[in-house]
Length: 484
Image (cartoon, rainbow, N blue to C red; front, side):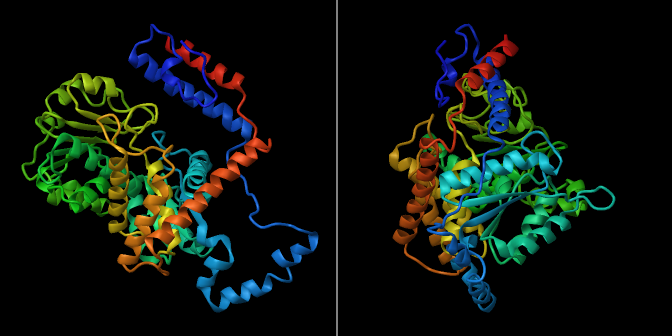
């Protein structure tokens, strides 16, 4: 067992040698949760507001504020789109949530989602050069029921202060209506990262996994375990990119989706499910055990594991099978177990396993691309283009069964992705301004490097403290004791 490092880069090596792979996996989860709690308390969160303009002297406040700023107000009054040039609106995203489905923890009350929403804003800034603001709201009506119309109204009211909206952790079925209404009725892009972001990165992983397996997307049999916002959107993007819906089967808590699922037909709130009921699983295969036989791809976003997906199901899949088990914080089956049962490629949502299929490589670049051209919306074509951009970037530097998509450390992927998304926005006719791909790439690269340099400078000059190594060691010691 090695001493833990400050950058946490050696987590697989810091547990006792006698620990099994399952004990190590469990220990890492406990350690990261314990450390996260301590680190958030130590720093009082992880986002602050820092000026981007100088103060050469106090008279400059007459420029940045009154009376000088009055001219900015009247300019925007006379031409609203100038707000993207004269304020930070053009690079500012609202991360909006009612916190009714936070990660795997369910309804955490409105303020319970702040840690996650601040995390999204943190990643936007460091990875995409985009400023983000966490806005956790109460969507309950007078009867205590979560009302999607309250979220819709809130976003429509605040949209004039932002360049884009990132919806997050809104429970289904409300999330479907919220996204679909706001995409059409807002003047700026509205992006649901749990659905579109997860779908985009998953599609990127599937593209490269199938390349390595020597299979074509239109030929493979795909099983999707879970039919929430993520998997229903994944299914839609897979089909849009060439997957055959007749070779696709989705499962929710009541069984498989198929044309006879009258409960989905009758409940109009779940219209996305009903759409898939009509186009997938024409053979009406009822059980996941049967569906998994000779399946080429499993995509599971359901209940955290580790035994939700059974070993025999993986064993029954086709040769060179692809298994994505992305529940957080614990995948539905651990990667080592899926591999032992014959899976060719295994991906999870966690960064401490190979092949992390996580939104973090998607939304920073996608939102940056949309903001660069002041897009009015993010189309499905833009999401699919982002998926291919991620897959292409990974393939250009080399892919393998243990490395199918880029990771957060590959800084070059984000301006590459942003530029491709910007070009698709122009092609789709939703951009307010146009630019060349080279211009978009250079602007994204500059902004991202600026964000990273700013963080490094704050750390180097002591304005952001290094995390105490004693706190890290204490969290690790506690986790090891819990697992023993």
